[in-house]
Image 1 (tube, protein in one colour):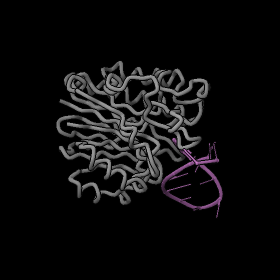
Image 2: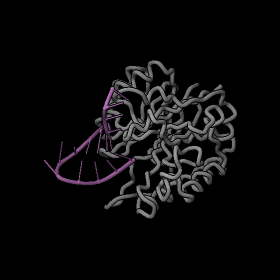
Image 3: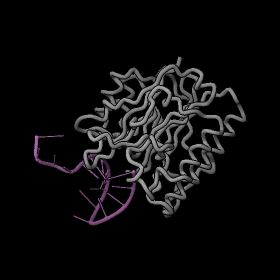
Length: 263
DNA sequence: ATGGTGGATGCTCCA
């Protein structure tokens, strides 16, 4: 079974690239972030005609996450916990998490809040969101230590200096601050592993490149998209890669798909 | 190749 995660930066503007990528990638389950559309705008027909079931949550032009699967899609959840933090004025539950059981694996498509600036309300929201996720993930494993769980998505955190093209540029910025990195490590410590890194060692290996300043051809990226697997799932991983080819050319997302193969 | 962001929206925000 092959699972993948990809921040597509608008499913409506990217649907042709998404279907073309699916056609050539033999993916069974894809977690999508930043669909940037409402439920009624989601291009479900294009995906279902390819044999994929889908679950999507989207309220407006921001955020939005989906799961598509051709190996079953059961027990869909549109938030990871009853206390998943809210944001905005008025406060709302933003569409940043969707989970489903696909081929026996509990897969989550997660779009961690960006944080915007250190000490911004959005930054505190990001940390609270991650803490809530950590607590919930720990409870899932406490319930069933053998659960096969994949926490996939755009984490908006570069956990190590090697995940950043130039640390000096990120001095005082989000994505690399110690509280964010600690929050990421705290999720790992509940019993999850980055299953891609062993197959895509750095430095200089990234999943995201800004559209500006020719960042991609200049190799100026960040590694912020991850597949974190529970122990039982990690034991099944027999390969992984970041598909940076998909970042090339006109009309690419600013993120590359991240792919994991399970035995 | 001598370049210099893109998406959704609506006159700006978000990433």
